[in-house]
Image (cartoon, rainbow, N blue to C red; front, side):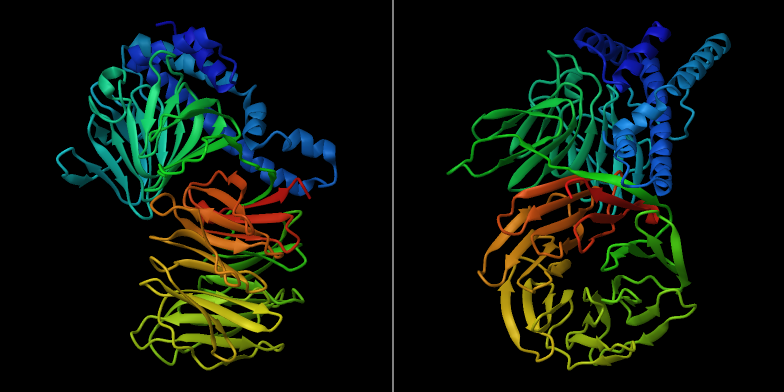
Length: 596
């Protein structure tokens, strides 16, 4: 094997400048040589590390630059964070190449097998279908006979096996050809055996995949044109030639979203297919009676990363004027300047507030946690006013704070439980209203022009909107399951939320229209919010992607990968210009819309 030539091909792959013959040569090297696969992933890991370092550095550097300078915008972020990192690491990649060549020479002299420098990174041996490179949470290996065992890092999968990811888990898998598959929470992926749904596959069918449900982000190694990687779902069949994309599967539809390259997306029910290119998506459904034409549409991502805040918090909320961002972690509250990422104020609180809001003057920050600890903090003062709220019936479970910080709501878990509502006056004093007859569940509250309205959803799916002051029931819905997360629009007309059996729902309480924006059984939404004008509905997903839809027609408006494997919370500023997202390790990223 020519190691110098291998490194040239890998370098070309990362820079997206390989022609078809080069891709075939690289695929052959990776297929035929375990050493080549090890070299490939050592190189890719080093390149990815440099990419991540540059991306985080770029977020911090932006704090020092004037946002009005279009020349700076174009150089640093106009082409997207992925290309930014590629440009900044391009010259340094030759340092990685040199280090690898020296390492290879030493290994040849010593007669040793080449080993990856990072512990726990493995490549699937030729007799396996894949290897589990890394995991978080619970991940199971399921054998063809149905037996399952907890998987560990380095777990090998054979043809016919399956891997299932738990509710709060994630898994990264490497196939025999070097392709990577990152599975999000609650996903089930099968490795095809001969005669399976994946069809005729190479390597004894070891590289055929079937995604039963959930989400997968896939970075495919260069494929031979006559022997491509085949991935199937219940509704679709994908033919892959080497690209990076996300694939989602549910009981009713399957969706593919491309960042790079091109795939052929075929609907299983009628064989209709479409080519999906970078920056596009396509959806295949199970509707056989009146199928819609299968087309590829744009992803519409017009947001750019402006700031990265490390160890900031797991909850985020903008001030009303959009200049400040509050983050809640444990054990501190922090208030940042949005434009510069400077930390202006910090308060040690000792609890993690799940709900936060600024009052209209932006001088007070109101917080509430699931156990009844309420806080009113005059921002910048050394202390906050704290109260321990008590439920009249049962144990407090879920909380909500209105956007103006004037109303608090919590549900309780006992059979005799009630929906508790409190009011916060101008001096920060909290007083209770009469509890409403609603048991435990997701809850949201908003201050409308006619008074506060609150929505609560219980475990069996009953979901009710109330007038919070009078206790009058306004509307009631019987849904398939509880909405675990739920939000009301500022005018109270619409509410939306995610349930395990409902998927992501948007409901217009004036017209009664119910729209499913994202199906159940795919990737869950961890947090949702409305734009201030009520025209857009945002969801932070468990796969690290922010999505937004039009509230009037349900049209997809935004698909924004954030770089995190999971989103904890998100918020949109009142002027619609800024988006804040909390992800892994309490890292917060701030994005700005380029269309405003």
